[in-house]
Length: 205
Image (tube, rainbow, N blue to C red; front, side, top):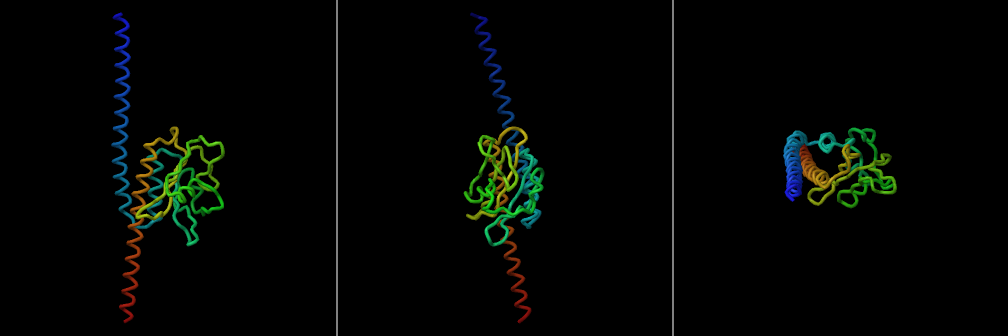
């Protein structure tokens, strides 16, 4: 009947409107991601110190991924341990703690597997993002560049549901970008130290 065809057409129109709004939200998110990554690039370019870079990144990902907390762990001593060099929000109390094999955590697992480790609240056993910090949702991404892992970026408890594939893609992109900046920072420090040693030796002669 005409009324039935009218109802079908109206449902199709509503469906198309929903698809259009969903696509518009995706476009807006991508634009925000591009601008945010550009903003992060400018911020990271202002410093060559790993600890300062770690602090800037923790604040950035906490705001942009809309999570309760964020932390960056960097290599500590030569014993293979990690030290939490920056921590914000709900992870602030973890600042300065040492992450060892003695305490299982997502952060340690990401460092070992060299890939993103994530929990979205579907595990039966409690999940710890950092030693002593249990989470419902959390993710940890290794900071890898030039074949080396230079630390781990971790985020805790997303405020709006679970981590989506887009969230994890953004986390991975940020982690890779940060790792490259840190690698360049270490290279710069090595060159500066070598220059100082050469100048000292030359002056002694």
